[in-house]
Amino acid sequence: MKKIIIALFAGMIVISAVVFIPIIYDYVVNRSYGSFPVETNNQSFQEEATFAGGCFWCIEAPFEEIEGVDSAVTGYTGGQQENPTYEEVSSGETGHMEAVKVRYDASLVTYEELLEVFWRQIDPTDPEGQFEDRGQQYSTAIFYHSEEQKRTAEDSKERLEESGIFEGQIVTDIRPAETFYQAEDYHQNFFRDNAVRYEFYRANSVRDEFREEHWGEDLDYEVAYDPEQLPFWRQYEEESEARLQERLTSMQFEVTQNRETEESFENDFWNHFEKGIYVDVVSGEPLFSSTDKFESGTGHPSFTDPLSEEYVIEEIIMTASGQRREVRSFYADSHLGFVHEDEVYEDGYYVINSAALVFIAEENMSRQGYEDFLYLFEENQG
Image (cartoon, rainbow, N blue to C red; front, side, top):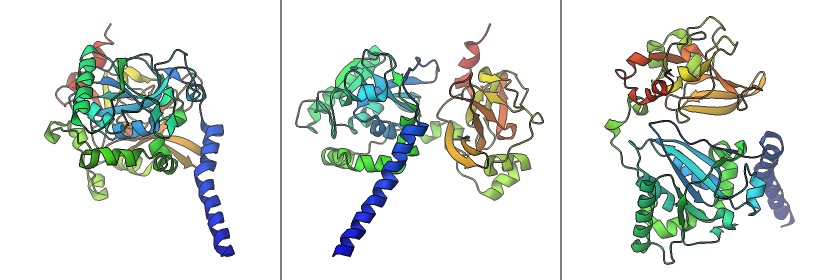
């Protein structure tokens, strides 16, 4: 019996080490300090929605999985203090709530559908927090960005009250959107980048047990869209290696599939500045715009920002030179390049292989199915 107890104790130590040591390491080494205000969205093909539902890790995850959602950013809103830190918000003294700002394509997913997803993540009858997280900073709210969103949210809340799904009163507040402060980097995509720790936290929060008890078979809300109406790059299906080798050049294949890097100053787009967008050579998904392109001195195409966060994914990988932020496309999972750290660009800038890109000139964008992105050049004329 003594040996069994010792073994169980040792096992608990190992599990605790696996879960908590990486958390402490990230907290001390990789974290950023303080938040910053997020500018109002200026991409004409997107709209915004903001939801507070307790732990923002748990609210971010379901929205990131929805077709048509460009990004779900964790942050703080509703309070008085500028640029609050996680510790300050967690103390409950700033008036802020943990929240998620969602940017989405309204032609693919509606605000009403986002509300249906939101209601299924929370306990809307609890005025003092959510599950294991207590305090005003973890309470629920819908922050509307327009009068239309306000009416839609109020109608949705009324239907929920009349449904009888919850016995108590629906207390989720509906209020105008305020300044949204993006949370520290280590909170972004936590459910994906720290999957083990996220699942450990979620399993102990009883959130999912509550959801299943109240929603039952209606728990997983399916966003309705016509697949045939999706842009062609959203319909991309994984191809075999043989097929890719057949239709790509040797360099395109090696770059996108095997993380090769082409020669500096000897590639197609390093000094190319014609108006247009750059798309994935494999899937055609839109990645970068000439409006964000600049001469970095690296000898490769360089951009300050992606065209849309939905299509450009960053992953931390280990290379011979150490830890790096790899850039990959979302639908094709093509290797594109890396994020370069820089003192001028606080979040770094994107250095991309020309072989991973195809250029679509402004005058050809409508004909080739990219008319939604023409606003980029209308705003930058003159």
